[in-house]
Length: 85
Length: 151
Picture (cartoon, rainbow over the protein chains, first blue to last red):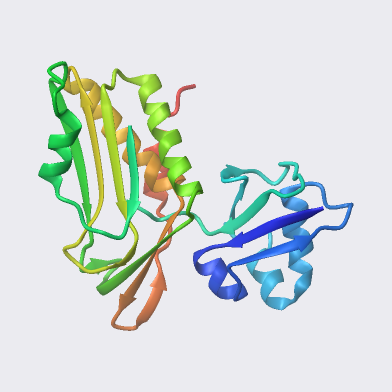
């Protein structure tokens, strides 16, 4: 299954990537699984995506929780708490 | 409902005029204008960059307006949020709500702003005398949103 990853603000800067298409292994079923799987990429990824970080996630352009199921072709985004207005 | 995310500045009078144009049902318009300050968390701010998530940001703003419309009697509303580079004194955001009576417009406008602050994907990066920093989310904004929750 292929999904599109998006990273914003401080998360984008720490990881050095803003978007990427990835082929996800079969055992990755949820947004939380994607986060844990990406954390294996290296020290920066492990730290930025660790459970201690107040990270927000969106699936298909809507804020979501870790247990949200992913589907082929959809977009998963990771970003810090929002600070607009 | 109008939702716009743009780099360009806007004119409050022009926007309010358009919002209420040719609609004699409207008896009240409440607007909120957010501005760039030159001081934040004790540090001077010389410039700011606002990042957003195209598609999702517009969708989130529209969803907030839909929620407001479900709770109050709103005739029309407008959200304009600027992105990109901004300077102190610049306008950042305009929320305007038109209704028959002021109560609905006041409440819906504040609701939209409180939700925008915590739910719409925008991020501010400030330039200060000691370098650039991403603005941290405030707990007070989350508390402001929670006061609207219906149990």
